[in-house]
Length: 130
Image (cartoon, rainbow, N blue to C red; front, side, top):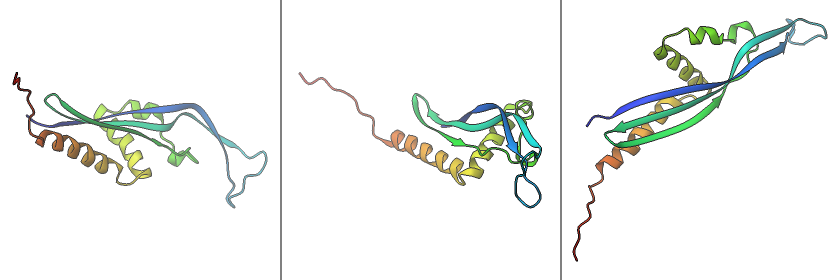
């Protein structure tokens, strides 16, 4: 058989987040304008699955995404939703990878190794001797 792998991703979203604006000197003054962001992704949930025939290995986890601090590091949820599925998945996994460098290849290697080890085990069959 042939091993097939797949990532599934989801996210927890906060409806609105308001961030106090900082002045150029790095301090927030009372009454300064605040920025409000809509549909802010806070947590990315992921599951990686490897299958070969009837054999399945999977690993799941999540990564917390920092709140946006400016328009530059805010991603509009509608913009993500408009992407083709493959690009959405790659974008969300890239966020997880930025926060936990090496996460994606490490998860893939662990799951594939576990499934490969299971597939390499000798087949066990029951024999009736009485």
